[in-house]
Length: 288
Image 1: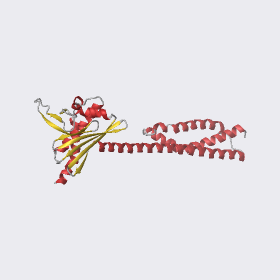
Image 2: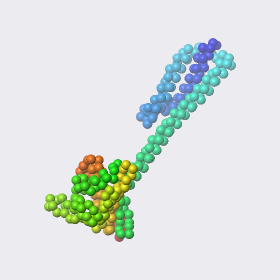
Image 3: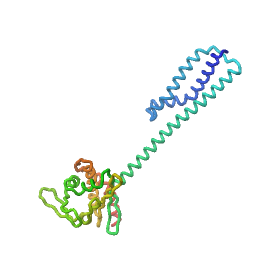
Image 4: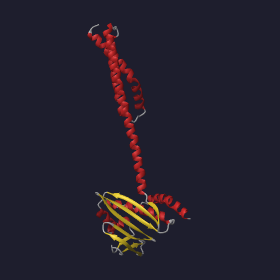
């Protein structure tokens, strides 16, 4: 057997075994392609290799179909070729599936992390309601990409304040100063609210029904942490509506900070009202 024929035999044997190694991968990848698998783009890689192998195998088989193996040397090279092809095929196939597995795991981890973030975000969006010595306290927490001064301005300057809380009007911004709660019903009626505590760019607390509401601002690098605390002496059925209202006010305040104005979203308020009823009602039952 001449060297060319030997090479043809060796190469053909290697490709034949190569096909056997890749065949299960080829079938599974084709199944993935037709089922719109998550790894469709990656799955195209191995079918392409197999198709090339098939074409080359047919080509070489047409050249060596009438030949016969001769001598131990030929057998040695054939076995060496088969071993090499198997090792290379197994390494590449395992690498491929490991990459697929890692990709899938990364996707699952990403979904889990995203889900946790959404759950965490939901728990941050809704106010916490806690029992205190003097009643209850509801705490909203937000962190916005605004300087403390910007948030303070949106909270206390009437032209901005009334974009997110149309009823409020600051008259004298200081501790023991006054505010108005305008009825906005066309009668011009209002009632006064006392400012209980105030420090520029830091905190602002005022009367609210039988209790009070307090805004606290804390710098966090280039952002601002906003704490809205409502002090509630007596828990009743109206509190869920009140908390849903402050929930919407914070969303509208955030829009003001973005330079936009937002209409009161009644449907969102109703949805939040239902959520706060779930929080408030068990506490009412415990109290009874």
